[in-house]
Image (tube, rainbow, N blue to C red; front, side, top):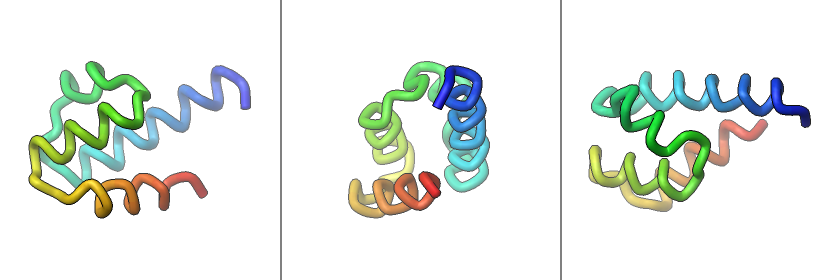
Amino acid sequence: MNNEQLHGKWMQVRGEAKRRWGKLTDDDLTAVEGNYDKLLGKIQERHGESRAEVKKWMDSLKT
């Protein structure tokens, strides 16, 4: 996967995260900028979702 593909995938994840967890801001997503663990933590912090539930959702985006 090249840099352009990675950037495109991250933009998809950003959009989906904002759609599903509306309390996430652009600043939140910029701060985690592709860091899987930081994104998990930010979603947990803002929404109180379990780590397992957030991880399940993120894993579903890999396909």
